[in-house]
Image 1: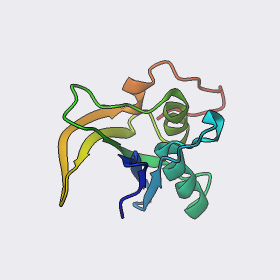
Image 2 (image 1 turned 180 degrees about the horizontal axis):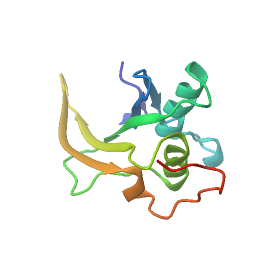
Image 3 (image 1 turned 90 degrees about the horizontal axis):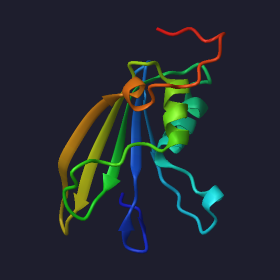
Image 4 (image 1 turned 90 degrees about the vertical axis):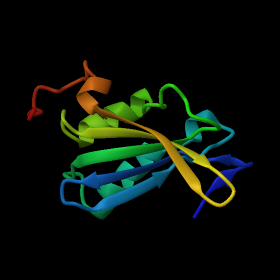
Length: 132
């Protein structure tokens, strides 16, 4: 299913938990900025809903619509980086995927791979958290 907002494709997120379950999410745009929901946060919320607050992200894919190949993909915003850190581990993989929707197909011209530690190197870590 393709979700569009006024003809503009949506950012999607797909994650795999450490239990091997796949959870998805889509960006929800709003006229009120604080009401918008990022695709990454939607996927994470689905993981928590379907598994538990103890669930951990093994890997997350952020699929961003682009009109043509970009030199660099759009990485998660600061809020999403923090939640990926909080609900993952320092080695959690973050894949940034660009996609172009054409008339009868989708094209995936660029894929970048990071760890959340690389994207969020100075994350807040409470003393009681154990780092792997």
